[in-house]
Length: 84
Image (cartoon, rainbow, N blue to C red; front, side, top):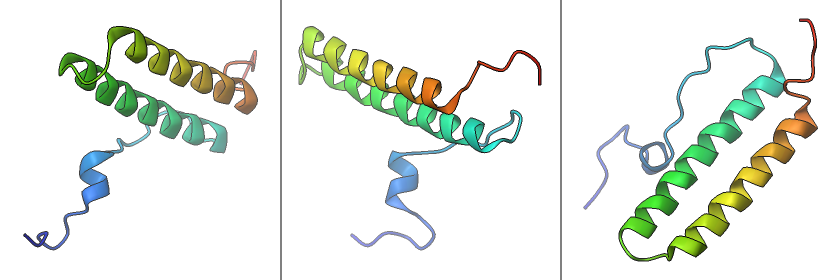
């Protein structure tokens, strides 16, 4: 079945919300990473709920994603500014 014009499969699977914070490159990058994290956690939890992943495997995957997000935050220097 062909897709209707103007419908992008990726925008349906990986929706992005608008950013409303202070517009700085590092904030925009972190926001995109945070949205990706949330999307992946949603997929993992749905797979676990559906019986496709064990609770332990789901936990390990989410923990790895969390560590990756923390590394990104640290490398971008988010939250280290005392005064802006």
